Image 1 (tube, rainbow, N blue to C red):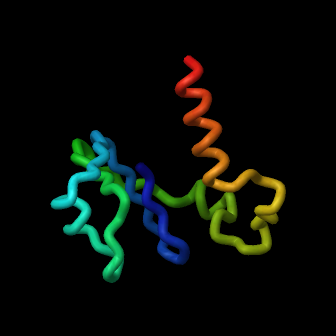
Image 2 (cartoon, rainbow, N blue to C red; image 1 turned 120 degrees about the vertical axis):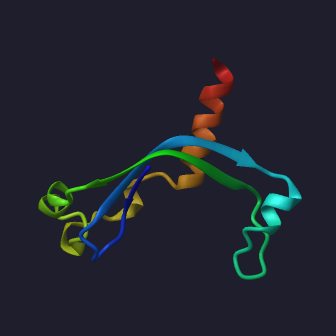
Length: 90
């Protein structure tokens, strides 16, 4: 996973193993305000690396003038649904 925060010129990459949890104990530990999440993703970190942000800065990743209109892209929900259909058809 790559962590990049707008306005902060630091990039952190972690390598590890992710697991999905739907048990009540895990979900109750990760409240969003008072809302209980549907699932929890836990990441066991093997390696943590700091990267030079030059490529991100040069790409203008945080430059709002370079942002594209989202209307031409499918919604995240449709992307996930399509992936599930493809996964089950294999």
